[in-house]
Amino acid sequence: MTVLDRLAGALDRRDEQPNVALAEDIAARGDLAAIAELAEAVRSGPTRQANDALKALYEIGARNPELIAAQCPVFVEALRSSNNRKVWGAMTAIDTVAERRAATLVAELPAIIAAADKGSVIAKDHCNSILVKLARAGYGELAVPILVERLRSAAPNQFPTYAEEIAPVLTPESRPGFLAILKERLGRISQDSKRRRVEKLMAKLNG
Image (tube, rainbow, N blue to C red; front, side, top):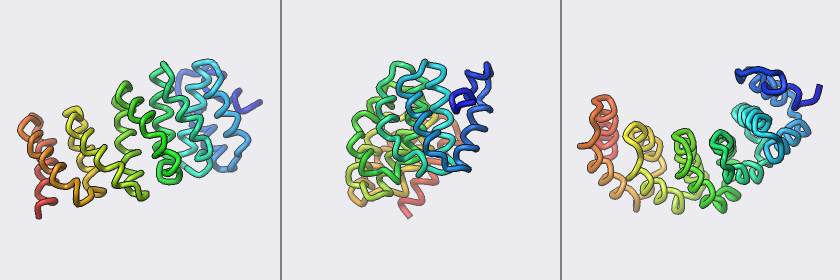
């Protein structure tokens, strides 16, 4: 049985458990050949196989990011897919390796941001996380202004989470603008729990 034969679609399964089990096995063995085979399936396999392979790859990345870090070009290429599942799967995979491949991914930010803008909430969540990780990896001057500007138009449900993620990587230059966005958006947050989170963050930053 090949690696691809162990994917959920090949087993005629509708759940993700076979993909997760495969990822756990590959991660435990550090099987780079299997990872390369999955990456090729993402690049050229049929839709279901590509989706399953991406799931397995980002599950491997969650367990050992270094194992899939070399596949960044495959993930960035997948961001341009018309298949939404493939786009957010690729974004998830990139998120797992962002700090380890920061220099590579900084050069691919236009593609990452474009994919988030046209993609699902999941893609947008991972874009925010990727930018935060790039900031932590030494690219704050580039990443933080983008984060702050994107926060301005973040969906209400995501706004508090994004703000909380961004706050630890703020640069001195970006802090006033960040606080201004929090203040401006606060009055438009209707859910008490979300409003309290933003108020708490503002108090912390102003303290």
